[in-house]
Amino acid sequence: MAYRSSEVTPRRGPRLGRLMLTLAVVLALPLVAAQRSAQAQQLFDQAQQARQQALAATEPAHPDQPHWRSAWTLGEQALQAAPHDLAIERFLARTYGELHWYVRGYAHWLAYLADGGSLDDMSGLPAGAPSNASFFEEAGTQLGYARYQAGDVAAALEYYRKVHEVLPDDPLALRWLGRILFEQGRPAEALPYWQALVAQAPNDAAANYYLERVQQQLQVGVKASDAYQRGLDLYDKGSKADALAAFQQALAANPDFIDAAVWAGRASLDLDRPQAAVGYWTQVTQARPNDKGAAYFLQLAKAEVAWGVSAGKAFYEGQSLYEKGQVQAANDAFVQALRANDGYLDAWVWAARTSQELGDYGDAVLYWQGVLRRSPGDTRASYFLEQAKQQLDYGTEAGKAYVAGVQEYQAGQFDAAEKDLKAAVAANPAFPAAWGTLGRLYFQQERYAEAADAFARALALKPDDANYAYFERESKRLAGP
Image (cartoon, rainbow, N blue to C red; front, side):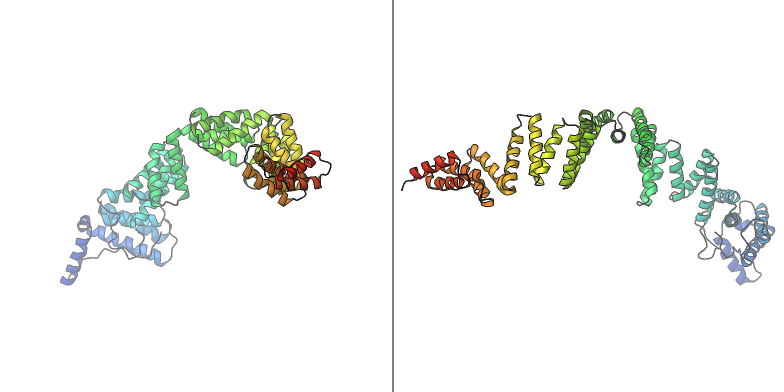
């Protein structure tokens, strides 16, 4: 932090003009400067000249370089001749700062401040010279860091606290006070320093991280928080078993630490330990009843317990893929699930459903039949099985509309049934069952001429059907000439 300028204290002159100038300068300096002896003044002048010579000679800033050595040696002698002289104290503190001789520089800054000096006093220094505060901060924080590295935490805290006391907004002091106190497991003491630093620099990622950490330590306890963070780090590195152990330690330290339960649940699922996962996810869902993610993982864990890990994983992978619109991939996953466990009813249902959506009606028929073998009273499965069969024979739209029309007809919803049955024969005019059902609907409504036409179309497509032949004749008879 060297700068190329001198700290000059004007000497008294014999003439009136020089006397007045000197008086003005003396009044501008601290009071003790006016009491400086001739010897002290001479030594101080020589010290400043030596510093200027060091800068002019571009000597490396080192205490043993000739001019630098003269500067600090003469400065110390000047201070001995004029103890508590603020200008000399400041000169020495700044010179030692330029030499990175932090122990001496720091000691002189403390003496300077104790004698009433101000870091804001830049009088007599050239424009652009490094601030007193920057020298003081560097000395104090460097000494603090050296003690920190040596393991002397108490001494490190003393240095950083002094810098903070003198420079309350100094970011280095705030950061290191917060960090050391955090590492010492003293979150309540660390909190205000991190809060102050984040207020200064809202986008400081490290400061925000430590602020969140100390807040978490205060909320759940230091042991629980530290174990949890260790678990996250291990999980990110792929050490799932060690991560689970760390999350379990966090929960042992604080059984109500729900975030730890979340990650214990995730790690348990990753490690194929569904029974343990059920316990963790149950705890999470009880604490967070509106957490859809937790509810999903609880159901997955239960499915793995009930149907096996492979079947459960495949089924819920299918669910996730289906929600993303990847129907074919979802179908593959559902088929994989039912192959892993032939008794997994939901896997049969979703394999059938996705096959039908994909237009694989033959597969859909087989899967719906599989559902009905395992759940014979499933009326919805029966409905979709019939739809799949008709779609297989007469096409997607015709088959779908036909089954809907039949269901509506059986429920007495005649207008809706007529609409869907007409849609079925429009999609496939060669659909005898659709024409026959449409004829029955017209016959029941005493619309005999329309019924006769519908039965005639059905009979033309299926000439051996006695029912179509009978109702065609009856419809024509009742319709009249």
